[in-house]
Length: 259
Image (cartoon, rainbow, N blue to C red; front, side, top):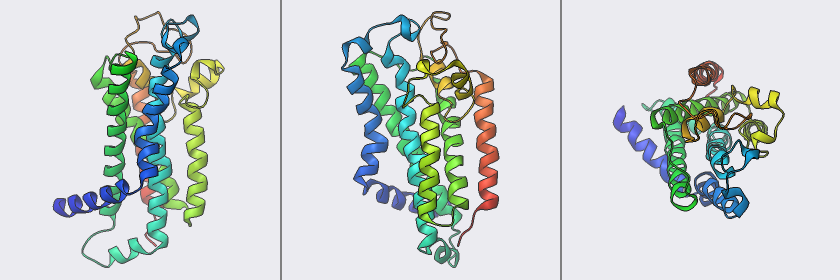
């Protein structure tokens, strides 16, 4: 089964790489956006408006989750819904290969693309903008994985329930807009009202946990809402993201229609 999964994953990976627009927007664009903003001198200087740290440091996790959102809420639901409509899932179910392997392969490809996007962004931010790499790498990896799992679980619920690719795309776009708003992509989180910032700490994609694990600001310096608190991510944040991932993943499995 593992060799079959490997072959399907390689094939799905090749299909993903044949979509230049998706590769550019999901893997490259988050880094490009951060570097463009970093070209503004004022955004590279520490500011009291950003809790004593630089804008590029505060915004880096938001740029990172931009790619996660594209993969989990735009790419995967559309692909799965399209496979169902074209009868690909039904045809595979008539072979010894379980169609579930195709879904697992999609998740693996999306995760690898998200990791590639994160690595490119972190290295670029470090080398070009002098943004230190994550100060708590284990906590950062945990926050990234549970955040990715929670977001893609939302995408899989949509893919499981939506009867047509058009509806899946519409719902995915709506979910993407909400997730990016909560992640501070459209409006930096420190500019949002405090209640919205606090809510955003506990909903996917869990950007506050990423920011906490990434920041090297001294504890207590950055205490404004939406700004780094510097330190390992809170277990409560990670636990809620993991619980959302499990709950929605289970719901997607129950709702999923192969045909």
